[in-house]
Amino acid sequence: MEERAGNHDEITPELLMVMAASIAAYLGKNVRIRRARFVDTMQANAWGQSSRVVLQASHNLNLRRG
Image (cartoon, rainbow, N blue to C red; front, side, top):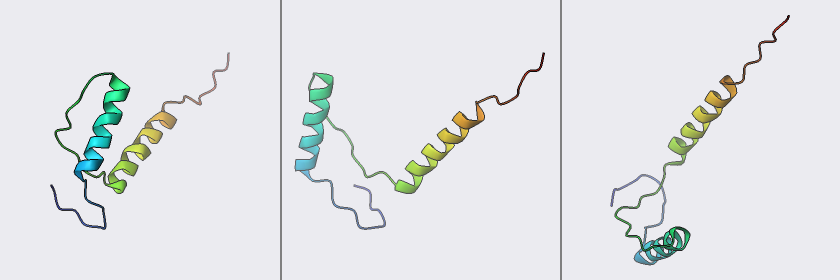
């Protein structure tokens, strides 16, 4: 697994089994997890922030006068 800065717990085989069982229950078929890693919270927040910016920018506030 990739080494990361910070205090993250290790992804244990038990955790992988719980994840696979949850995904299998949701999808209704067996799954194989090929890779698992922790998500960098700063990167996840950046994606969310950019999505909010795009959504808010899509609202057209120009009033049409006729």
